[in-house]
Amino acid sequence: MGISGANLHDSQALIPLVKGIPPIRSRRGPRRRRPAKLHADKGYDYDHLRRWLRSRGIRHRIARKGIESSARLGRHRWTIERTMSWLAGCRRLHRRYERKAEHFLAFTSIACTLICYRRLTK
Picture 1: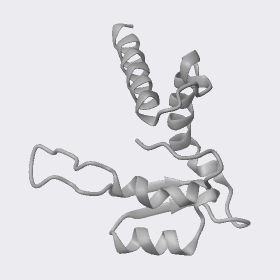
Picture 2 (picture 1 turned 180 degrees about the horizontal axis):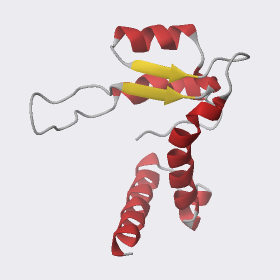
Picture 3 (picture 1 turned 90 degrees about the horizontal axis):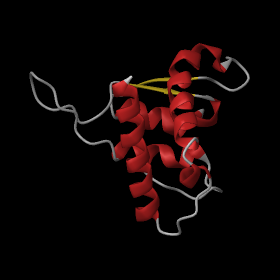
Picture 4 (picture 1 turned 120 degrees about the horizontal axis):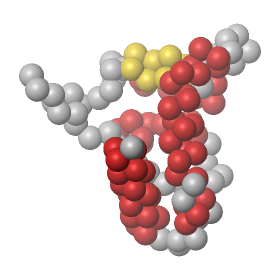
């Protein structure tokens, strides 16, 4: 998880975000160091990002500007939008009151823990 300024374009944060993914545990074989596939909307439609993902061995599904609609990404996007909606339900996170990024990340972790707890007790 990372925090960036509001005036930073999403495409500029893609590479640090993918590099920051921790190794994924598996029952068999070595740990995976990278995701197998990446779904993104038209905001990430840049050749340098496609080349970078390809060089890392990550298959991508990025909607192209002016050619494709983002509708095919809907089922994957819905999961993210739903999670962001749950986090927006927490007043402290809806508008960022904390000045320090560490405090904001701590409150985000607490909110995620509460959301998971509520979902598991249903």
